[in-house]
Length: 512
Ligand code: XMP
Image (cartoon, rainbow, N blue to C red):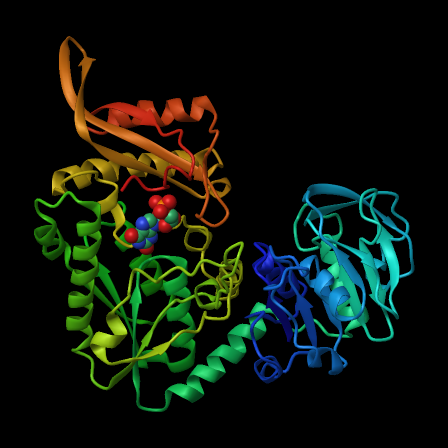
């Protein structure tokens, strides 16, 4: 594997993903990891990420020099390059101005990283740095420059240490993936062996061995891709000793329960319990309009219902959960902030402690795009693989104000039209999330000869890469018109539709 030491760059996860896309398993460790911790991963190459600090500062995160004595190939990117230069006897100069954005790279020297780039006239690369290397350490040669940076890349092929001032991991850098591949295959001599079919095979084997012959595993199905993939992997590993519990909380989209359960029942011989808990949830939510209270009630009720069902199964020892890699990467924090925000797993939090179960988390090593590829490997349909993220509390936080069966029903019908129209116009896959929200007010309208006084639906459709930031999608006005006409004509009780044009921040994706 490749170990990536994280110095706090916002792009560290991208490096890991690019390396994996090239077929090599990679892991992120904080830059504070000790040589023993790094060695335990049995790395075949090491990459030092970028980061917001300056190596010239006193409290700058450093490097255990002994790592360089292991003789492994090392790639330093941005801060990683400056750190290597600084440690190996070169000189790094701090500058007041940061250079951001596009730069034209001139390949000035022979370098294994440039294999396949030689014939090209222009190399656009992405820069984001303040400091730069002024004097290179002994043994290195300069292999690229840009108009403003005399040492944009340097290499010591003998020690297999390579350094880039620009970011090969970002999409804006031409041939960035090729440069990284050259490091992995030409310099480090690695072989591409990280594929999703090998992941499925080894994960299934591992789980089969570690779970034991008689133990039972329980898993919550939500209808989303993560829990479905977890269930299918476990099903492959232990068959019917897995029980999946699908809690229908009455807050799902139209026919969602039927679709998900129907599909799984038809294609896989799963042990599947479909709990009809709609009334229980609605009852507890009666009269509640505070969004955080809604979330708490739904979370607690879920645990109660799930616990009750799971207690009916004998010998349950494990709870399977769809935790993903970004949730487990340890983040570092120093001046400039951590690069990785750890998100809590809000949907099933609290379950394992309460039930005294051990966790099985087969997706702990994967990024979301890899989960999608595993899902393809398992033969899941596009409708599950590309389903928009859906919040755990479901439509409860999209019915603004009090939740009643009637208001849920209105929202469900309107939302179905939004989903249908996004699909029909080929926009569904282009957007991050698209949905309807029912507002807690009524407005005046006119229908036929009479005045009406009815509900307002807001449309929320956003573009995003990770839900941390988002912008409203510039949908064609004809598409918006179709959604609006259909909702007003087909959904009884709605006479007005508005489109949300706020970005995140300062807005959020959901309205509650
Ligand atoms: P916001 O509204 O914070 O949403 O911009 C960011 C992403 O998180 C989802 N979301 C939730 N997911 N439980 C969840 O499982 C929640 O309570 C919750 N609130 C928001 C939201 O749909 C978006 O994808």
